[in-house]
Length: 76
Image (cartoon, rainbow, N blue to C red; front, side, top):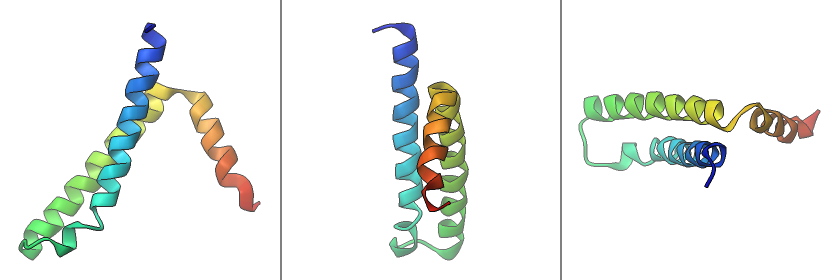
């Protein structure tokens, strides 16, 4: 595996993990935790998800961002 392909693979893995973290936000309120713990956990999941998402975009590259914008422009 070449270095560029490895970097893109790591980027896609980070993107998948960030998606999972964002989905976990919807699960946290149903866990038997205190309200303070739920709030802290939600904030940590949001921050970690954002960091991993932007890291993945950085690793995958501009072509990925262009494809993402093209898919999101379908309503215009």
